Amino acid sequence: MGLNPNSDTGSQTRNQSGKVTSITTATVTSAPPHSTGDDVPHAIEASPDFTDQSYPVEVMVPQKGDVTIPDEGDDILVGARPDERLVMLGSRYTLEDSIPEYKPGERRIGHPITDSHIELQTDGTVHIENDTGTTVELQPDGSVVIDGGTNTPITDIQTQTDAEGHVTDVSVTRSSSVYLP
Image (cartoon, rainbow, N blue to C red):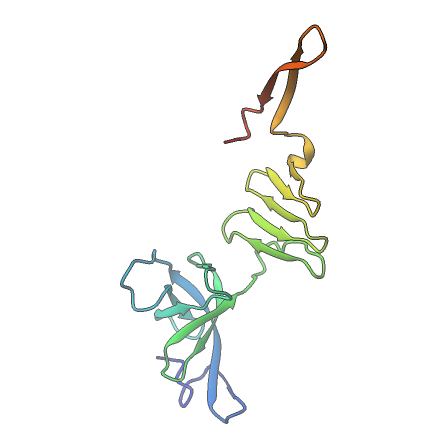
């Protein structure tokens, strides 16, 4: 297979128990959609850098519920299990990729083929931005800010009063670009 820990040319190290492990870089050659009944939760095809042949590679997830399938042509890090099944350990930035800005302590979850992302900021703010630049912020005080405050869900509130000054009617106008159930 090319990643056999006993006879391959990939990088080899021994873990604490003395077992040989292998890790190498590879290029994704196919990222088919997952279907019920597949023998692994998510799998891709990848070609290790030292061969032109592609192999099935199980995609490891950092947490149950997460799914990040790389795009064809992405550079990934591949490891071999003791039974020689290949697993994707993570993606790698290339010289052509723009690396997103971040601050220490923040977590940024980006979409691999667009500029859409979610940022968990150190002050507790959850910042969501789509590919067109539209933003939604869930702030620690409970407020929601859309497009930096330039796009609000409510654009106008009108009240009507009776002769004694009691409010008898409230008319709320919502923005057509913000859905309110």
